[in-house]
Length: 449
Image 1 (cartoon, rainbow, N blue to C red):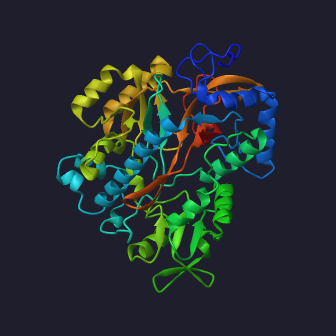
Image 2: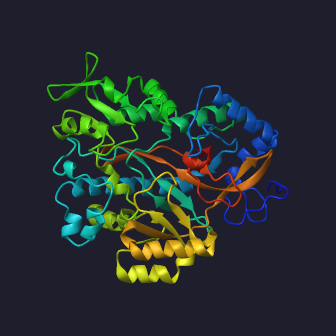
Image 3: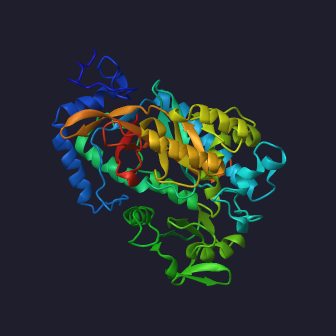
């Protein structure tokens, strides 16, 4: 039986829950029925009150620390999730091999797969990590990729994030609160073991979570995950170095889950960690130097990495990314500049994103001039009409653009697992395309059924 349409619900692009005629897609019927059985506005207020009562916060760029969680979960059917997860795992395996190669033989450059300038100009490249290798070969133990659906409903990777991926703790909290509120039957694939899986990534022995402290915007998550993994939470000043190893109090530290904002080797935290990491005195998750793989220009070459390092065909598409350092590619991008998204190569958190089709003419021309003057500082991507998902806005369901932050955990270079679902991030303003939480976006749970 087909569920009746929701009055006045109409999306300008592919919608995950509703077909173009307004009927509910089969995999979303159970969730939409649960939400429609209650007042969506009341559900939203109850969910956010439950999370606020736990002291959960995440500071955005304007200083607002209210974490806006939506009560309408996103549902991904298993037959869609399995190939998506396979592609995510493949991608993180290739990124790990790339980081290892960057600080080792640099075969990808020597064999002409990637231009040397891509590495030489990458902000995240750390020369001090050259010839340093984690004993287990794992650089990118936790991957949090940004995945979108286009207007046809096709999954593709927008950006890679293996520097300091955040959000697993927030996702667990959102899942717990959402399930308590909606009480679905059947329930989605569970993620109760996510903290256990994260602890396993740290390996045997004594492990800690390393935080900047309460000034970090995600400090709540640091404390939450330390508690869930039953390991200490520490700040850099708590650590002592004795005989080439870290100690916390009287306890030797075998592994550190680093969640500090700074990860540069020449930062205070980096200068503390790097000498011990370099001599194999501690396992670091994620390792110093992995930021080179998050470079926006490196993203353009990930499919080449998959073929080069893994000898496999890429399983998951990615948003077309222009290497503007190639004269012919720059010329091609300038011909369609009005249609592109321009990004500062080293930025993250949604900062430095310029959407030319949504900008004023004078601003487009100013950005065009900047790109012509220093093309190596930017990348360009095709504008993707992100899919939407029904979201509670002022008590009614309305389409809002979304992406997905799934989590890939690596225990060995050839052993990855993808947690089922992830955190769906929402651009709360109508028509907005920047979904990052630090840019005043929202979030919702994602279910795999």
